[in-house]
Length: 262
Length: 348
Image (cartoon, rainbow over all chains, first blue to last red):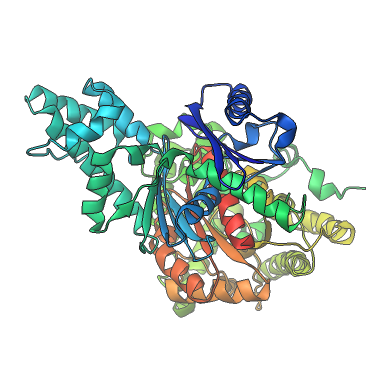
């Protein structure tokens, strides 16, 4: 059995892999990464009904990858997302990963290897955090944003690319009596525009897969498709693609030569 | 035994020097250090620290971190004099701000021609104007003294070239190269040369491994970024103000010789993008590099304007390129992720 652990900015994920995915776990990242990783493994073992010694290799990825004490090696989430997406659909050539703290565009070849990538700069615009801030300002649940935005009649324009300034724009619209649905659609549009501007620095080739927690937001994905004028694919569980890739890389490195990777 | 140059406390060295010599601050690879040396002045390249308090009152948020750092250094501990070069617009305006906010004994700005390679006559005249101005402050600078100083600088730079030549055969940690180069830019040249000779005799080359990277950019103020990069790959060559841009020699021992020396510096402030791209492609071949990291300061116009063209030139020739745009405060884990992912990509 192979294990991939992805400690993201917002959520921590684990995948256990045999011939297929045996268990997928998602929990909040929390402050104490070591504890979070231990909790993930515990849940995973329980769900898969196996023992710790049944795991041959653990690969850690994500922001917290260096804080996972039981990991045999660390690989970046960029390489892991590519590997995971390629496993799910080997025709994918572009991945757009929108996580809690950053967004990335990744180009991959027919073998699942990364050929180029871009990542947002330090600010939170164009990420899940942006949506969290806006959901709070609009008093809606994060999970409701997608459905609400699809009911939009006349979306508003959010011109600011800074999360803090965009929040004040949202509050202005609220005080002008604009509808929640229209404001949310405007927020999605702004993020899509931001991500598109970043991702087209690499060649956007089809198929395109969107991964990360934000891929669960249907309205956001639709806005991105409109912006790119291309359809995108959403995997069954977009949040665990990085952890899946990590588990796959563990399995591959062991089948080549045990311990040959640092 | 470790070479003295690798354990040198530069600040302590400069504190000692301050007691016996006049120290001038300088900020650019185009500074005619040889002329200052001939006048008995110690030119010290300033890098400052990342704690910016006083400088923020003078500079806008769109100025690069290097400008903020050096102004902070000047406002905190004034030097005997300062020499600016109009390399980029920020440095030119910084010179003005420095002039009215810091009271040092000598303040001068060297104005470069738009294209250094086509402006040798003009540049020689400008260096002459600079030298005559310095004489008013420091007394006569004889031709003999200038020749002697140029020769002292050439000796040092010859040895620095040797250091870079060694990097082709095995690895020297980038933080060590950084320390040697920065010491050279701040110590009394002949004293650095003595330590550099010892260093070159004692340096042990590390393993020749991959991925091999070229680091291109301007000033690396804080060497911790070099350590992060070298956790994942080896820096085999650099295209930096704090590195190879300092290596070229003056073939004639005259002001004209100094002017001509600047032709070999490949600075984006005075070199067009296309030849710069070609230069990096050639160096990547010469040093057997696998990829290039562009380490750029946020708001650095000369480097950022050329970045797309440079990236495209490198990609056309099969050299992947990672662009890192940093400011002092940039979150290190984000930067680490990009560097590690880039090296994973190069390893395939």
